[in-house]
Length: 549
Ligand SMILES: O=P(O)(O)OC[C@H]1O[C@](O)(CO)[C@@H](O)[C@@H]1O
Image (cartoon, rainbow, N blue to C red; front, side, top):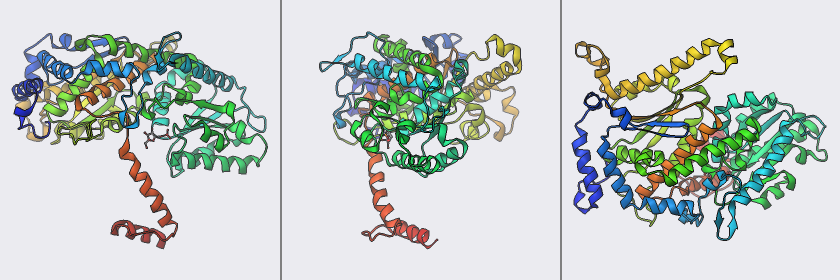
């Protein structure tokens, strides 16, 4: 429930109407709603390209959508969408546009922002990336000792890691189809543990590092890059061409890449108007392209573009991002549910929850409005998740019988293993896919209906009963392909934008993550024995304990 909703008198008419409707809906159980309406699925399911969105298991009626759209209209969602796609500085606290959508414009599209042909710029950089991708995948990139590069390690963190990692994992079958022997790895943690494990498994002669950092100033990434450089120097000697043969970099800070020692021809650029968590479509997506090839990467962009066009032009009652965003607003601000689980029923999507945690919470985890006032309503819920079938054996107990209400997104590809060679070789995998689908549908059914999904629930003891009435959406992908993944991720990006408009917050900055990094600088000096100013008792005590050994 919006904070302080008692003061409804001071609210706009559309909010008052929505909340009054919420009061009427509060007492209703999804089991009864379903029982009363056999056409509910048809009326509350929408499609866009390779995606189907089923919101029939949300605690809404069809008319709820009307009330929600009135709120969206009042918040001027239409003009915000126009501002986003017009290249205006919608990231006001940093004075920047947010044009991730421009990264997926098709060749020849017109996109003139402040006199610059953005689409042409984007495609020129994609073409440069393609040349590097083709060279590496064709086995034509050699290390300093003449060996062909067989392993690529992406060094990055946050948006420079999560998106490429998530997508590379998700599209692992597309990788197999392209038959490149290249292995792509990821190292992000600042403690160096992931990198050092990887370095034990690869050969310095045939390993290429991608330093991936929009700012080229993130300490996590720079310290891993430094470790990689030292390792190469130890393994291969400080020979000529070492950096040129073993490091490429992606950043918007060209001078910093050069200063670090990355050769100009090995530098790939992105622009200020690409936010880190929105950057997988740019050259930051290099590991994805290395993994699935450039044709696959372009299909990914095309899938996202399809969703951009849908978001811009589809009527709101048919518009997937608008519907998903507004249903989220309903759950957060009317039903008062502040936890949201991401549950993909496909092991290839295991990194999706981590990726969406950053996209949703770094974007909308805000409590100050665009004009600098404290918000009077709840914003982004806590988002977390796991591969659904595994989560069933971990936290579903709480979803079904805990005291907290949680909303869920169930995500699954409808088809898998349909290629002849798979069917012939491993029909048991088809059966496993069906098993996962059945579990996905069963879990969302039980969460919605509760006891009504059981036979003779009344005769069961309390600990075996299910309250149900837990809202969820189901997102069905036709298959897990670059196109469907592009559409899916663009859908979430725009959903986040829709919600930011309703909550009147800037989804494109992240000031909340800055101060901790600064305090760490002082703390590091303290850990290294420097005389520092006063600190709190806990920090001082822990530092003292660590230093004592
Ligand atoms: O790509 P960069 O500049 O290294 O930043 C990495 C990540 O760090 C953050 O700024 C948060 O610390 C994210 O927004 C970003 O994705």
